[in-house]
Image (cartoon, rainbow, N blue to C red; front, top):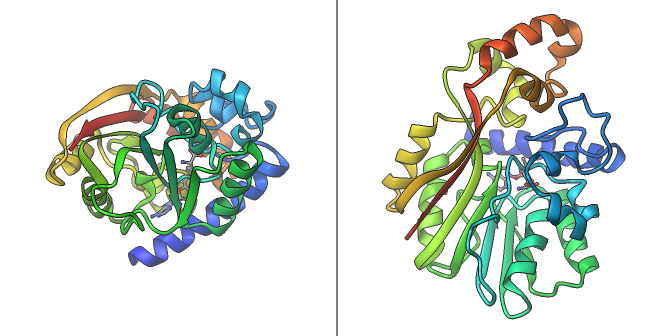
Length: 277
Ligand SMILES: C[S@@+](CC[C@H](N)C(=O)[O-])C[C@H]1O[C@@H](n2cnc3c(N)ncnc32)[C@H](O)[C@@H]1O
């Protein structure tokens, strides 16, 4: 499938996921509730280690689709510029705005109109006039060369059909001395049946690449000091929460899904990649 077609399908899936999250919070997420969605609002974000940030931005946290907290320990300082690739409904944008303060700047880029509108509304509601959300694709960022101090991203690059273009764009937009902190899903040796399932791509699984390929791609783009800062391996129950709700065959034969997910335990992980330019 061509890159444009993949992006179109992913965008439709996330417009729908946002709508569902507003009706039934965290119904679909890269880091979803493990109990099938019966927990109250914000469970995806809690799972992603956001407890303190949720106190400050509970409403935006209900539509968080991340798989970690890329801003924790990213070293963002007051006055800096932060760029979020695939900013979604804007939860991380608000957290970044808290860190950079009124003298700093936060830019989000996303391709899905509904997400962009939600993020702009969240920033306006929170009273942040230094948060800007731009429409665009992360493979061709609408951002000037060497203009940002920190690139962050939360569970997005796995969805790109052209990951090396994304890595090159991170290198292009970072200032010399700038840093990146990216949380994303990585996966090894996924069964073909899962890779072929139409819903598995937008569930952040089928497009995920092995950790070593990710590291190699970042380095090949010219980024420096590239390493894994954190790694959380999913067990079968967590995987069920993450992809079960998106995979229709779960409803058809839940026990078959359980068996498949047992086999995947430890082969799918959420990883924070860090490095600089
Ligand atoms: C799993 S959600 C994560 C959203 C947000 N980072 C968060 O933590 O809640 C993926 C987001 O990335 C966006 N996205 C996916 N692929 C993209 C691409 N190639 N270019 C721009 N945005 C993309 C989707 O529209 C969606 O908002």
